Image (tube, rainbow, N blue to C red; front, top):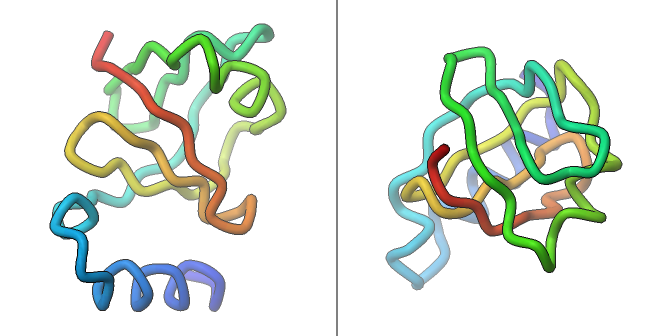
Length: 88
């Protein structure tokens, strides 16, 4: 793993907010062109909140992410950028 991942993982681990405590590592398989759907290499897929679709549309396959509580995806390769999601 790259150093950005470990730095953000350490930050999230130290964060006082419990919402960041349960995050799972995964990797993007595909992102729809308009950013409304993210499919991960684990097979999980997520609908992206409308307000975050422009952000997600700029993400690329093979980027490392954290999926937190199934309602937020944090992109480790985009400096911790995050989008709100719901399971598809």
